[in-house]
Image (cartoon, rainbow, N blue to C red; front, side):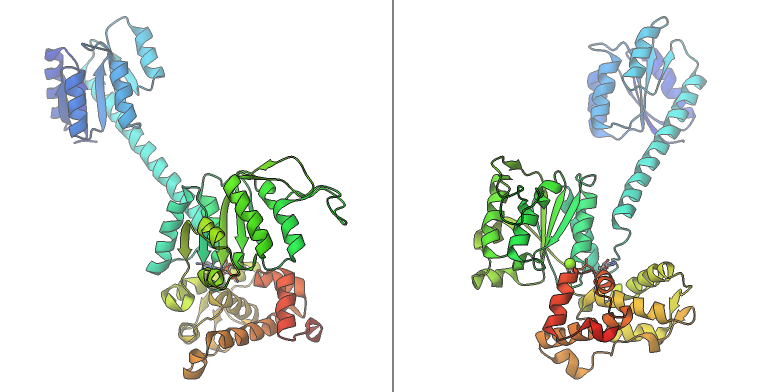
Length: 451
Ligand SMILES: Nc1ncnc2c1ncn2[C@@H]1O[C@H](COP(=O)(O)OP(=O)(O)OP(=O)(O)O)[C@@H](O)[C@H]1O
Ligand SMILES: [Mg+2]
């Protein structure tokens, strides 16, 4: 590893000169220092790959200098030079983190061999570190497709947000990946070994939601037949994800706010406080500021949870993600269904690119699931793409109207696909069954019709 830069610290000027000559002859870039002060000055100025330090320095000893170096460069290999007969100090130096030691007098070739070994090993160590970081990221983010700069920015924010403990407020239209991102934040955070507990505030009746959140003691109310731990307790040390926070009833909002402020609470019917050590992530597809203005959401709670806002762009604003998402989902479903579908025709892809995706990534995922299920060859052809390209009218309708129609069509497709099996439908849709029942009621759809 020629041209690596080496710092040598020794008060023996002759030895210093000889080592410099020999190492330079072998192609190293050598800096020499006569004492620790000179050494410190050089270290501030320049990056070294390795240091050779005499154990007996003028003011202190080589071990102290080595530790100073390691405070700044923890991975820099240090070779200690010891006087003959001081094997104990040499061992001590190794124990304190020296890469190796050489006993004076030594042969220059021996020193060069040691230096080369040390450099190789530190290169390897850096490589392992780099790989480990890479793998960690791969692990955390491997299921998240992000080619558009908008999504890359989101992922970049995710890795920064993960390092702090403040509440995160994710907003984005339905199906944009809010839950996926919430999980990624958890997995990239120091809390990753602890639980991630999710709850949907819109899917549960008020009383049930309250018990789910804060828990209750046995007998706290009629029907409380046993003690229930709330999610703040179950997620201890981890992350709580409150989905559709805009639908949290006002009465619960007050209680939730107090939990965030006081970091402790009393489960219903209990006189023992529970301490809260969780990171809170909330999500909504509504405009929460609007909900505050309308008096449906407490302003003080809004500011509490709005510490770090994270916006997920709708799919139609990042269509460059579509081809990658399509491949990702083809692979996923083809493995799951044990089919050998592995591509999509350009006409089919064009159809997908022209569509506006009111249901965002979830809708795209379902479209591909359907196409893979129906595919008769390795390639998905355009007749299996069931969406109609956004023509002039449909894309210019009011959003609520388009969304409602989408919901209806989506539900019908889902029920057809599952033969009216709501549990299976809920699984595919990634929704609670209660959600689906509500939606079906809204659209007057009866699952029995699809059996
Ligand atoms: N960038 C992405 N890469 C891969 N898969 C994605 C991506 N974004 C979303 N998905 C997938 O799309 C589906 C919907 O995502 P998710 O449930 O996180 O969305 P959501 O915003 O919480 O939706 P909803 O508002 O309907 O609850 C999931 O299956 C998720 O894995
Ligand atoms: Mg969700």
